[in-house]
Amino acid sequence: MSDRLSVFKTYKLYVGGKFPRSESGRVYEVTDSKGNWLANAPRSSRKDARDAVVAARKAFGGWSGATAYNRGQVLYRVAEMLEGRREQFTREVAEAEGLSKSKAAAVVDATVDRWVWYAGWTDKIAQVTGGANPVAGPFFNLSSPEPTGVVAVLAPRESSFLGLVSVLAPVIATGNTAVVVASERAPLPALSLGEVLATSDVPGGVVNVLSGGTAELAAPLAAHQDVNAIDLAGADEALAKELEISAADNLKRVLRPGPVDWAATPGTERLTAFLETKTVWHPTGSLGASGSSY
Image 1 (cartoon, rainbow, N blue to C red):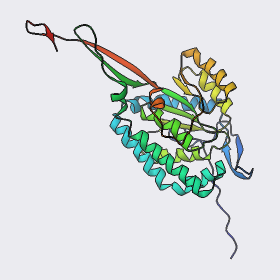
Image 2 (image 1 turned 90 degrees about the vertical axis):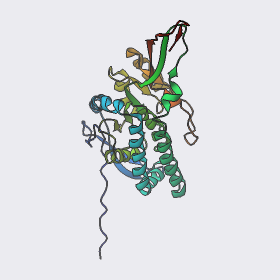
Image 3 (image 1 turned 180 degrees about the vertical axis):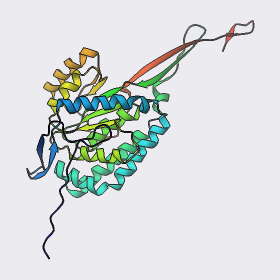
Image 4 (image 1 turned 45 degrees about the vertical axis):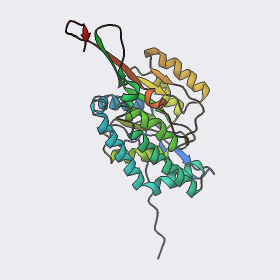
């Protein structure tokens, strides 16, 4: 009996809940740590980046308007789906990062746990960052966090899956929508994550995944007037400086890159990085002759 031919996977972008090829029609070779060919990944263009921003903006109203508890349920569902595809991601992470199967499996397990960790924060972050403020006067003064809007995320270059989820999950957990630029060297886990998001309960456009040249895609995203914030985790020092200058044009929030141990338990820094604080003043009335207020 002759050997059967393998069916090679065609990796595509994930934009607006759909899987388009790059508008430019370009692809580039993705290799493993030893230089062996793995797949052809789409090389996204500036037009793809603009389309992703449009999709993210369209999805923002519904996602930010959902209850925090519901967002937590949706994120937990993603973790369930990741768990079900553990073997696939273990193989992709091992090939992308040059890890043994056992070490790659540990990375995948940590990634699923990280997603669950952020899913649990969706309905708790408001209590940490908001609350009643004491003021001198007959007023209630209440502060509450609100999502910033559309966030461009440059995924870490070396940590293709755990690092990716560590920068993406907190963005959407707090009600923002995201345009993710996958690791240029190892984009396959990110593109496969798009398939998981499409078959979970995450509305189309909440997360958009692009692959290709980081600098090529980051430049139009940093300058885009409808992008509200940018995470520079995947940019080197020179590129980060250029992007920060571009981001200043419309006063984007910028999270600067720095040394991060992706395996360590995260704090709330990335949850609060892309939140705005809304404060409401409300006059109180007086109770009785004593002048006490409520």
